[in-house]
Image 1 (tube, rainbow, N blue to C red):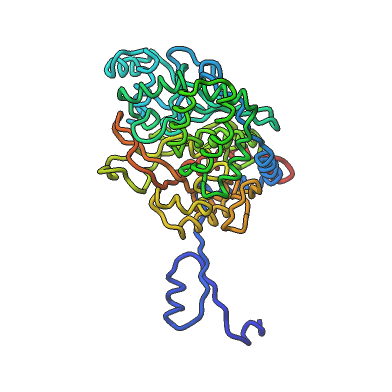
Image 2: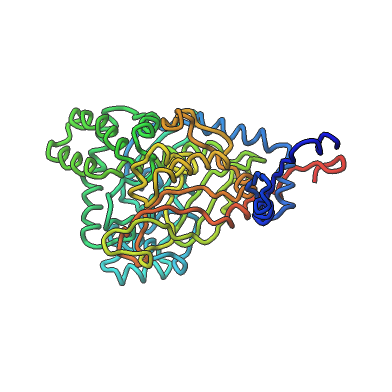
Length: 470
C-alpha cells in the first residue's frame, strides 16, 4: 500500500466515459479502456465458457477449415448434381415461405418458373408459387450455395467443387453478370434469354473445358487473387481472369466451336464477378469441414433470404439461428436510392464465414470505391475481425498486413463478449420483384443470431458442477 501512494497514481477507466471525462477535467492523466457488458444471457455465456470441450473443439474446427481443399471438377445441370426435378427449386438463406419472401426472392422464383416452362406469364407463375404447387428449400440444405436470391432450378447448370481432404462436394450456379439478372430478382425477357444461352452454350462449353483440363485448383487461385487486390466477395477481377487463363486453351483443345469459345470468352471476360460463384462453394467446403463438432462455438454458415439473416454453428449442427436481415449501406446505381434497396440477401456471406470478403478488405483497397468506404476503413475492419475469430488462415495472406493470414473461424462467444459483428461486403437488390440490382455496400448480421446461438450452446454445454455434469 505504501508503494502505491509513493508515486503519481495511474488511473484506468472502463465503461461509461463520464469517469474519464471527470478526471481529464481535473488535469489527471487517465487511460480509457473500451469495454461493454456481454450481449445476451450471462448464464448461457458462463456455461459455454466453462464447457471443457470448447477450446479443443474450436481448435479442431480451425484445423479442419485450414486443411480443406477446393477443386473445380465438373460443370453439370442442377438436375444431375442436386437431384432437382420439375417444380423443385433451391434458394439462398434460411428456409422461408412465399408469404414472407422478399421482393427479389419472389422475382427470382417467378423467373425460374418461367425459365422452366412451368408458367406462361408472371401472373400464372405467382399463382403457382403462392398455391403450393412447387417446393423450394435452402441451397445449404444440399451442401450448395447461391448468390443473392440464389434460386436454382433443374435446368440451370452449376459448378461442382470437391474437397478431397474431407471427401465432400459443393456446388453453385453460374454467374449471370450484373444489373437485370435473376439472382437480383429480375425476370424480364432478356433475363430468360440469357439463362437459356447459359444452359445451351456456357454450361456445356465450361464442362468440356474442365473435363479436358482436369481439376482446377480454386483454393490456389483464391490465395493468389487475395494478393492481387481481390477480396473474393465484391471484387473478383483477378480470379476471373486467372480462371479464363486456365480454361480457354482447354476449351479450344476440347473441340468447342470457335464461335462459342468467343462468346464464352466475351461473357466471362466482361463480368468481373464471374469467379464469385467459384469462391462461394470453395468457402462452403472450408466451413462445412468444421461443422458438427460437439462443444465448438465456431460459425459455419451465414446466409440471408432477403427477410431473415441466419447462422449455423459447428456445435449445434444444422439448426438455424435467425434475426431480421438489415439493409446494406453503400453506393447506388443510377437514380436508385436507399428506399429502393431490399434488406440483405444471399449465401455470399459464406466468404466472410471463411475469412475473406469483408474480412480481407485490407487486401482490396479498390473495393472501397464500390461499397462506399475508405481505405482506412478497410484496414481497420480487417484488423478488427481478428478479435472475433479463432485463428488465421496462412493460405490467404494479406500483403498489406505483412502477409498475416486472414481472420478465420468466427467465434460466437467473442462476438457476444465484444459486441463486434462480422463485416460483410454485399450487393443490393431492388426491393420490388423484377427490378434487379440497385447498388452495393456494407452490412452486418443482426446480433440476435449470435444471442440465439449462444443460448442453444449454453443449453447443451457439458459443464461440471459439484462433481457431476449438468
